[in-house]
Each structure stands twice: as C-alpha cells, then as structure tokens.
Image 1 (tube, helix red, strand yellow):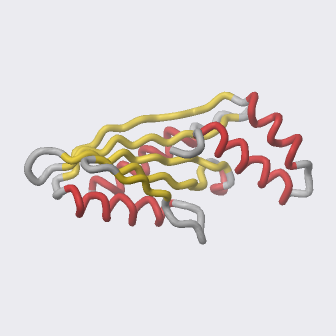
Image 2: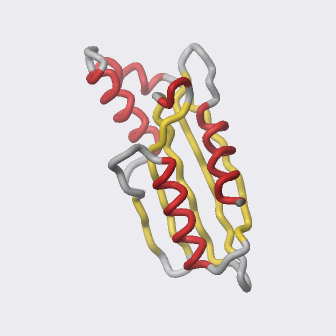
Image 3: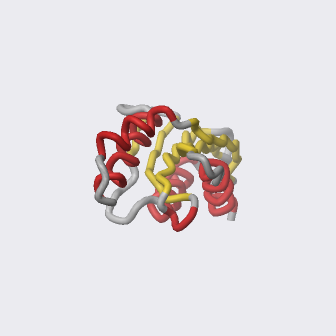
Amino acid sequence: MEQSEDRILVQELAALGAVGGGSGRLTGLVARMLKKNAEEIDLVVPVPFDAAVRRVVAVLEGAGRPGRSAHVESGRDQEMIRVVAGGGAGGMNPVVVTALVTRGTGDCTQVKLRAAAKEGLIKQRAGEKTAARIAELLSR
C-alpha cells in the first residue's frame, strides 16, 4: 500500500481535530502516540476469485466513509482493498480496513481481513468490532 495504517489513521484524526475547531497538527502529534487496536480475521468465501473481489469491494465501500471509493491494488492472484470506515461511538473513530483477497482452489477464495484504529483513554475496541462487523457481512 502506498501509505501505512498508522499514517492514514494519524491523517484522519488530524482532519477530525481540524474540523472540530482544534489544531489538526496538534491532534496529529497526539494521534501518533496512541496505541493501535487491530484485529485480523481469515475467511474462506465460497465464490470464485473475481466474484469474491467484487463482493469485498462492495462490502468495504458500503462500510467506508461516504464519498470515498475503496483503494484497490491488483496482482495476478491477489487483490488488496482498503477503505477508511467509521467505528467507535457515533462512528467518529477512523478505522483502516484492509482486505487481502487471494485466489484459492476451485470456487473458494481466501480473504484476510484487517481493521485497525487508534485507541484513546476510553477503550472502544473499534478495530476489533469493525473487523467482526465486516467479516459478518462478507460471510453472508
């Protein structure tokens, strides 16, 4: 990916700080020091690779922030899809969701799902909860 999870999370939190009337730069500095809450879930989706990629893109775009499309990096047997979703209280905590879709055998496709968010004093487990929510949507 062109940007790391941490960099994206810091930028998103800084932008939220600036919108809230605070200093985006100060918010970004504080965000760098926050711990990250992340969860990884491995799934097997019982559909062929191309259909699985379309499904993952649709689910992640639906979970992502409005007005933003999923970022997709292509390879021969893998696709990486990334969005920034909202998690935590009121969906205000940015969560970077990354899905690595890998061609499997037959009509099965493997999906490694990762969701990560910064945690403040109040532990919301936004990364864990978002990963579970997205995994549930992909398993339907």
